Image: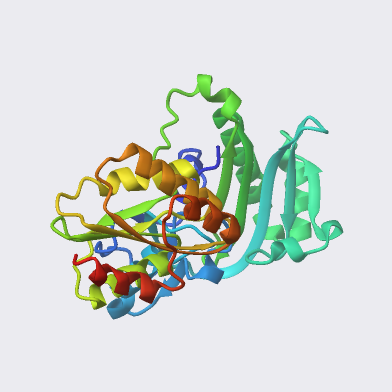
Length: 354
């Protein structure tokens, strides 16, 4: 079980490891009290910074805009349902620290690098510090401090390693990656980011595990309960464009719905059922540009929805991308038209007198 960053940091904090002061936000309208701040999308994928999922805010007037932009960012197919606002650290140096279970060695292994932050994976393997984590950490802490050039932090490093290993054993963790581990200008080692993976097989030992706040594969926002046109799309940007197109055509969209990357037939079918709670619904615009999500899977979900939902409204479908030819064949057998563009799909709504 992989944890979100804020969940992992809570476990670190309970083990006495320093983490930044923070505030968890659940809606785009919340304004954090933390300032200046780093605004971070809570999603189970890397490369958040490259997809606009991390924003540094040093001007109070830009705080609200940054929070909203991180909530709607399409982060490699994921959108955040929660956002972490953290204090901006006064950074002196950044490092990489990884403690993980090595099944081959049947041991907990410690890895470190002098340079933390992005693109750590591009560093040659032989450039990393790597040892089995030693319970008697004094000599190991000395070697690690010399490798990192942190001789004055030998005691703090030893204490940190001991606390991380203790946290992993207590929590049955398989991995604890701190990147970056920050040395502040005041000389404190702080876990500025953390990835942690727990052993699912050990869940029977942890009735306290309560990690429910996971991003769902679909992000649904109600816009107008009395609206007549609903939308289904994949990716936050495409979903927003679909809502805008429906609105520009003169209709009030009932919802924003991003079914996410890799959506399955069940995910799409569940989306149809959710839309059927709108009493005045008369049309559904489906706008999918498939990458990980497959068009044929979406097409099968559409057919399943027609079979299961007796009063399903008129569908206006635009599909493109992975397996689109198979999707066309599937929909053609049921005489469901495909529109070549979103604009043409929305324009067709008027022809049916919605």
